[in-house]
Length: 614
Image (cartoon, rainbow, N blue to C red; front, side, top):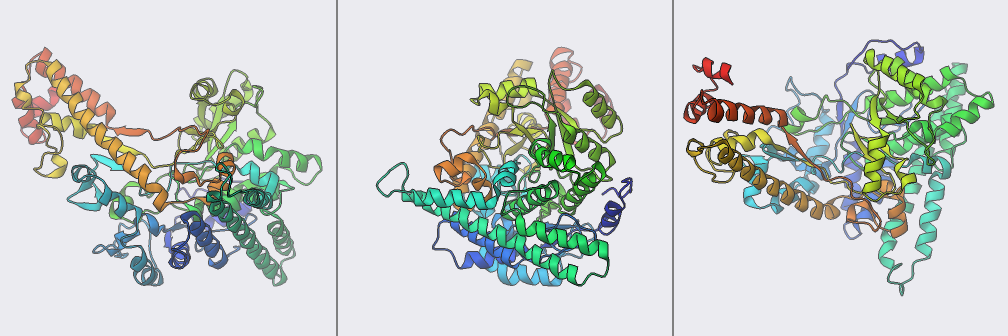
């Protein structure tokens, strides 16, 4: 983590100095209270169990307001922390040596109390119930060999690598504008109205929807109580505070938390606090790939910013300081993947809380406003890599904004560019209306979401193209998995007389692996509804609320299934390798296949000339 203090705002520097460089702690608080609730609700529908578990977490997890904070709320202890989600792969802790926190290369640490909770409370309940175990048991045996190394379901083979069980969902953008405009009170009232309107005699509006609406109401009340706990703590700290300035800040925090996110936001500070509470509860609800995203902040926050500026309550520096406090809260949360493979793959990477600015309004006019500029300035001045910014560009994007974005990129502090022309056209071709397509938001690293139309959430699958090529070279065998044949029996490559024959074998192996990838993804899609629910995310999705269904249950009427892509790795490596084989073995004939295979088996030791040829 960068620790250079370049921000001109002293509060930002003080907060950052308290956690910069810390090794994050894997917090078990969410896991403990979530599990305690699940133990008592096995007779209930999963979406209701999830809502009750979240409410129980919010009722019991420690609330903390740290010095200098203006945006409050956290999902773990002081400093940098990660959250444990035992329902995904928590049974890993039953494996030998998994709790050895003394290892020097561990990117996170446990306390002794955390370890006791894992051993005594979490493992006895979750072993045999996790999504990871369920998927491993459900896939065909041959596919299991392609997924896991030596039969260990926590060590991927990296031939086919599923991500559905290391996260609850792909990247996602919540409809924060709905919270700011209506509050969770309004969402609660909508769920209550829809629940009251259910009719046992109406097949399209029947009582099978009742558990979902009850879950939404339970969740909304839990969020209200969570915010009120912070309000009470702020008032308690204010009463004991000897610093008049900080006392006034704490009293303001208390008043804000008493109002939002239950009621609609009225000011920029309230809007940011409501956004963070919503984002924080989403983190308690699920682990999203790339973390939960911020969406089009310059659009849904702009009315509050504009009103505060016009009425003299806020200047640019105050707004930047509030934004800094939001980024600092995000920076203290770390995605911790507590398996041996997860430590190597996921930890230490960027967060990707994607924040989108610019683009178009529904009528096609340019959406740039003063807040777009302020967010770009915040990105350039904030000392960490936040916000993870993108700029939507189109033919009407202001030239000066483009120039400023390019200057920020030159400094290494700039946004990604997202091409409205191509993206909007693609979304319309896939079935979106033009106006809603113009409201797309960046999500994850470089994906996009239509927050009330898209629904696909299952973590995607990566597969190793280099392993596919190895299977051609070794007749279905792969060096990553011992002596057993994992691919097709395509024959001895020395017998291929033409490059066309070699390429045919390659595409046969590739088709076989792709088929296994799709089988794995289908099994993961099928199992999800029994393992994962998301009442918060669903409560902020129009289709879920209209149809009374959790977003994880499967297809929703009117949804756009944008997702489920597969991720080939090693593309450039394999293209280069195929080109080398075609040129050297079949066209120029300076190497024969047997000699090349011998060089490969020896990792080119003693075959320097062949390596230079390649």
